[in-house]
Length: 290
Image (cartoon, rainbow, N blue to C red):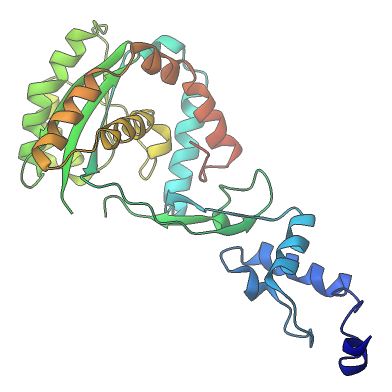
């Protein structure tokens, strides 16, 4: 009672007006990459606790989540991705099983983890406003090249020094045909590679033609179309779990763990490949959950 006399109206004050609190939800949907305290309506003259705002956002279906990181897509990329997906949507399964999927990735000695949050509704994680655009490759680390087919992992090569067209061609020479032979791909096998300048340079194009290696046309900025990205994720997880203490150990662990990738894992990735194309079409060429 004494508290009430001293501070009248402290208890039982009306809740934040429904209309104004819902404005916070609309603001969060328009600009999801912000802290909840920044969602507070400027017109509200009363103090509103962050937890109140978060509860209201939750009631409106918005939840704080770490934004997905996806490569930045321009209109040309989006058009090419959609065209690729539509062109290959009805390809037979044995077409995908006769491809050697390749890529390079950087594996750091010590795993880094930086968290950010966005407010979004369920099933909207990969909308443009809810992702953080990134560019490829950013400590000690190693760069590796790898390939795989539906029947299992192929060769893995550690890249020493600067990667250029000549180095890339040497990697292809030493690893592609042995991988193709290991997995007994048909004579009509196809090499998948992305559009990195070292892969598409004049000298590399001439080398591929001279060595009769047919490549799969590829839309730029499309790692979600390459199932090897899932294997890179698997590899980094198990390698970091072994806690390498130096670059030499990191290189050896990468080779060891790559060779251990189960053939069943590779087969499942290729067996479900059409789902990636369907996702690209559904996203109209935009980012997908892959």
